[in-house]
Length: 199
Ligand code: ATP
Image (cartoon, rainbow, N blue to C red; front, side):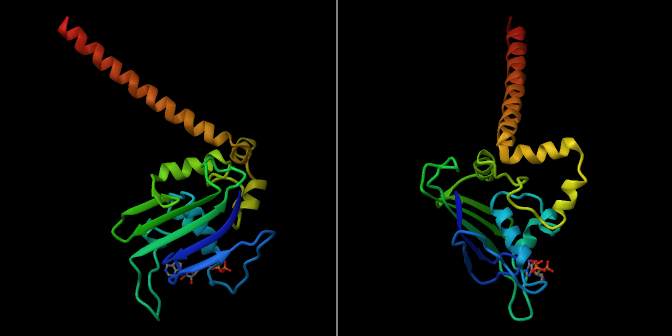
C-alpha cells in the first residue's frame, strides 16, 4: 500500500485546494516556521480518523477549518482526501485504488467517504486498524514522540508495537464483541423477567 496523494481544501492554513503527490521513495517537506508542515501530517491523521482536537492542536474539531487570514475570510468547510495504491490489498478493501475523504462543516456535520461512498468514521478507523496503520501506529511520528518512546514504560512500549503488528485491530474487535455480549445478556435478563411475570 502506497500513499499516492494528499489533497487538502480549507484544512487549517490550506485554504485553497492543494494536492501533494508522493512519487515513491522519500518525500521531504521543507519550509519556514509556521508554513504548515505539521498541518500536513495532522491532515493525514485527521482523515485516518483522529478524534481528539487537542492532538490536532485545537480546542474543538472545528478549529481544523481555515479560520481566515488578513487576506481572506474564514471558510465553512474543511476537506482532506488521501489516495492509496492498494494493489497489494494491505487495506482490506477490494480495489486497486482506495480514496478516503473526511469533510467537516462549521455547523458540526461531517462526511466520511471510502471511494466516494458514504461510510461511518468507525469504518475508516477499522480499515486502518486492520492494516496496522491505526492512529497510534508508528507510521506517523510527531515531534516529541521519539523522546516519549525512550522514556515510556514497557507496557506502553508494548502498546506501540501492537499497532504495526495489527493486534490493535483484534483488540478493538474484542472490545466491540464484549459490548455486544453484555447488551445481549441484558436483553436476555429482560426477556427472562417478562417470562417470569407472565408465568
Ligand atoms: P514549525 O516549523 O514551526 O513547526 P510548521 O511549518 O510545522 O511550523 P504549522 O504548525 O503546520 O507550521 O502551521 C502553523 C500555521 O498554521 C500558523 O500560521 C497558524 O496560524 C496556521 N493555522 C493553524 N490552524 C489554522 C486555521 N484553522 N486557519 C488558518 N490558519 C491556521
